[in-house]
Length: 380
Image (cartoon, rainbow, N blue to C red; front, side, top):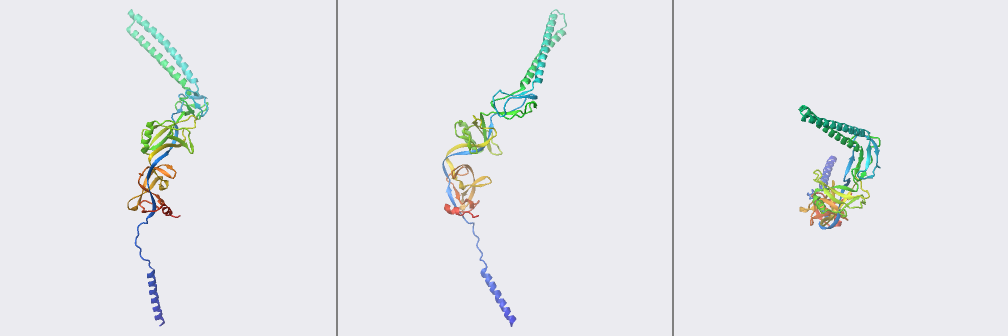
């Protein structure tokens, strides 16, 4: 009796548990589409804008010469101060002249010997020709005398050439400044041995005007070529040069575009020239070239609409089915809270300006007021 009652109780309890589990089983949910992201759209506008494009730049001398000796020997004199400004033709270095002066003296003596031989050969030739008139000498001896005379003449010419050569070597023992400019720190001291054509004594570069080189994208070649054709003057403020927060006090002038585009970078080297009256610019300096531009149809968008990925810039553009796509843009100069777009957008297009932090390629969007779009930012 007891066991029958227990068995019935167990069956009833099991049925109750099964019924309870059935009641708690969650209902199967129907699949849903991606949730729309609230954003704010804004129409891309064109506006009059005056701005400066910036380019990394390097200062370089227009003329640079490495000074190398043209004769070998020991340095006997250094005739300048390191880093000083020098004038064209100024004596810079002296090299021991003893050997070259001795060679010169020897060449002069040899010339005198050859001139004496020429006098003798001339007299012999004259004598044989007089004898030939009386048929008192063999024709061969006359011919030999004429040949000896010609040899003597050539030997005199060779002796003169030798003198010019040793004179040149004597002159090369003095090293002069090739042009006005600034000389660097001497690489040799007095008493140092130098080798012709090999040893670098120093470097001289021009300093009254310096070049500033920078690279521009090939898409901008037409613009810079137009500036070059217009012949912008040094008094024009189109080109300025900055070093950090300091702006160089003189304006530059565009003088050339390189002959070809670099196929590796898609850029072309552009050169400006800046006056350097106080020698403030030095070759090798790096700075920023600022190019003044103005446009009546510039594309200007809020900077907050731009996202950066791996050094490239993008905006979100709405498309079909309320989905957005990323579009790469090339940026110009910032103007307050806005920024110039050089390439990638056209006036009248719409872009996302609020809520971009919640978007990715292909996201579904719904338009919302700016406050709602901003409040939808993911919480950290």
